[in-house]
Image 1 (cartoon, one colour):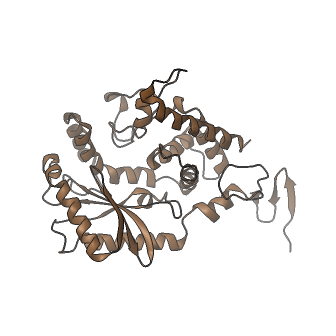
Image 2 (tube, one colour; image 1 turned 30 degrees about the vertical axis):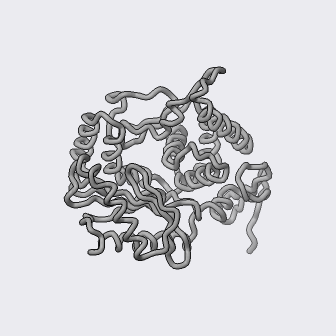
Length: 347
């Protein structure tokens, strides 16, 4: 028996199967979306990672982890922890890197890790080059980044050594979280605090990863939009927290809430960037620590980490923008213009 359908505006209701399918006729601002395609279908077709992509990422993680834990690596790795977008379940197909975090057994202080960091990153580089084809390697204060070839596909990899100061970095206790925050309070410099921040990354992964799949679908969509629009001033973690904040502003609605509703609210926040103020009280009380001026998005696990600090430090709400802030503000203005266009696409 054929389904009975009743047309409603831009969609139809399938009464037999009790479902509502939305077809979009409006011009939504996502690269590659088809004129008659629903947002949900677009996310499935273009944005969500497919089985092959996840398999490739998993293969890369396994092989790099195996190398790091081998006897060829001169440092004793306690364990490897999957982080980043893959660990959180928010990876965008073909646009996300692989993050690996690993504590080293005998490195238990910031001073020791700082002393050994260059040697650790050099050892990682040598080890990977002995096992894989490697290109585009670079280092940051806290990490080694490169692209490696695994099973014929190139994959960007971020590898972060961290302090061995907890029993299980992927399952921190309340006492351990408090201990890390206390150590951060005592450290004067942002670099030192950054070493402790990396110890909290698995907790950050857990915080974001526990959210419903509907939220992760919107996170992937906004990440896709950010990346295809080349808004490099916004990090992935900021997108993840913005979407979670929008979902909470909607009252944490049931899983049936439309992805359009959450996405539209995110773009509303982006087009009014100067008003963004986001923080959480799951692991600390923000008012117990120095609060940045708005706009800000505080890391839910690290009271000292404003994930949009570059923008906060240069943000100017008035008509006059000092020359020192002009470059950042030009990027913010472009982001706001694009977000305005995306927001209007939902109307």
